[in-house]
Length: 259
Length: 272
Image (cartoon, rainbow over all chains, first blue to last red; front, side, top):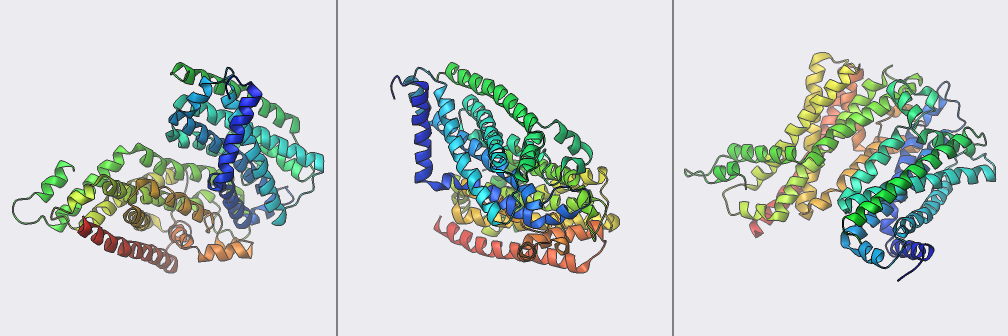
């Protein structure tokens, strides 16, 4: 790996992480199983909510699927950052950084691994949703756009969690990575469209940058696109801000002796 | 070993009574948990977070014909109480597992301390903490506008139920601790039970669940009955059947878990 460029080191790191997942699928399963439980619980237990007046969305299973997919791709980002934190704690990351002139590769490598995981995760959840009978009336380009938004979310979450991992450099930081993501997802319109939310949650959902993403994906899934441009703008803004967060995390790790 | 426990064990005149042993260990258990902010804070914050999100996010569910109340906050308060009780897994089991791992249990085995006192002490600590958290949750719920159809007496029974449910979940934690002897091994028990809650009647009454397969799962899920007991006090008043089912299920969980745990603990202490 000595003297490798950004792309080659990123690829090598991503390959290493994905190989670990192949050898130990137990590392990947939580990112799929947890969202699946929520899918079962919401689509099965709450479907009557979809029949209420003013719900305005054609199918409750499709409605909750998008939230579940967002959970899945987010967990892929967070769990990959757990692995980064492990490498930082064990000293492996230090050895990588000593051997590469472009240290940003440690972020891009793990982000690439998380992205590959997220593609597999979203595809698996989509297949399960289709088998479960969710309504999919979006065109192929619309569905691809939906997946693109979900994958940008994955990058955003990975950058956030990697920034924390680089600052804390301990696998004890796991709950600090997961909890804000969990909360942010639940502060979006999870169970019903935003118009049916009441009180403080309606305000919080209106301010939550994930709300346009979830609303756009819900529209695209049933062939009725809404606020897709806004969704990409929010996602790009988050990605830009969190890139700075992750890069300053890398600087912090370097300053602390990770040179 | 804390000074209190040591003093209780080292009483010069005969063995300390069981009540003294339990009291000292309960005090120690409460103190230890109070110091563990990472257990205590989520135990309060998570149930309140879900109460806030669900009561605003699912308020339109009250429009479903046959929904038993027009306040989803009141409906969801019961779920929050059970969610809070779930943290008994950590407060009951975590400390005991740590005691086994650090060798504290082996040292206790050399004293007149009885295994039953150790279990009762851990459980008493967890139950007292469960009570404190439940008081906070009920107070926040009532302040936010929830009502208790069973009146002030209902609030007292809600607290008693919360204590019983915490005892049941703490017993599961104790069982996991005795079986594994590792605080890390307690960790997966909580998410498992947390997920199981989502497969219960926590979000809608069972008769309003549309999907047959989900209604079957919710009916088979013991957590549904734990939720429905306090919910009956909040929504419909005094419902003997719901209360009996909730208490019965919790008691069964506690008896089964503690039965196995105490026999395993006895053999562990004998070996030590």
